[in-house]
Image (tube, rainbow, N blue to C red):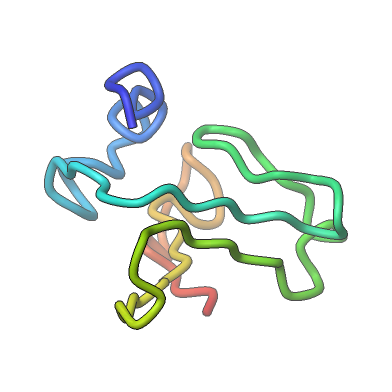
Length: 89
């Protein structure tokens, strides 16, 4: 992931407050309702994310385990993050 793709995570203080600077080693895509792909820094409406997403993780070795955590570092809103780092799943 290039620094430009990381920019929303840096601006949103995900990198620095939630996780340290990272260097992703595999490509991952998260898609809701078969057509809405998740992108860094883009809001998704609650109705769209009510069902579980499809998660595709790349890599050469299918035996490699991963842990995926969805967190919201400024829940419920950036202006009032009183439930900071809300764990969704």
